[in-house]
Image 1: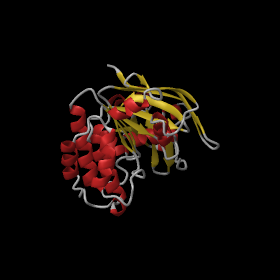
Image 2: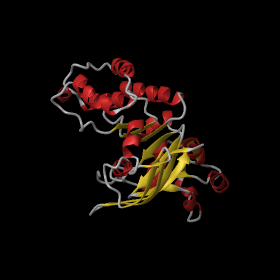
Image 3: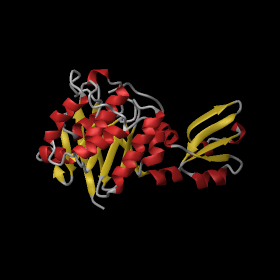
Image 4: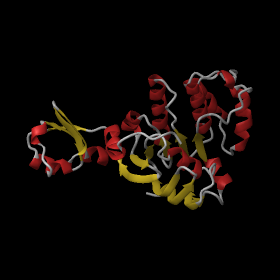
Length: 288
């Protein structure tokens, strides 16, 4: 399986924050969720991939091409969903489309009309009147209307209600059915990733913590619950994010066999992506 996106040794320095030797790859045919607390470096990484923020070091390849040397060709083949701030507020969605469409060699008006109908967007409506959720839906429509081979999205579901988020995820599933494509999106709504992601990448403090198959990750971890009296200095080391109260303890483990051996009377439950993420990062940061 070829990699549709490769990031190697990416460095981007700001006075108060830096991406530190960020490396990961996105296999073709995969939906990759890019997770981390606010301020972990998700948006900076995406902006660097798109050359919206000039990197200080490292290489980025998309479709096997250098992202800087072949920027125009690459951007003709990818769909981008950011925060919608690049739209002209005084224009209608129809007028905005007429500006954006000529930039793409494979623009499809039929696809555009189909997605506008699916998201119940009125092309005559002014962009200044759109809610944040409607702006995100419109950005997704534009990203999907030129036969993009890779979608790169920054928090695409953050402004959407549960119904529209469900529609969004179904559209992404349909998009991936055609084969030879990829999706890379950051999100803090980790429940969406339970439904759609194939691979998860966790970033914290500007560093990649892991890149792992979602199914393997969820199979590896379990929530542990039991009486605090069962704990000792040795078995505590088997448990991450350990919390102890007068009612007992709870935590997370990726050493299930050892826990079963050392603590046979505890309760083991399936973990969520959010449980796993919080076990690694242990708190929130400020937005970046």
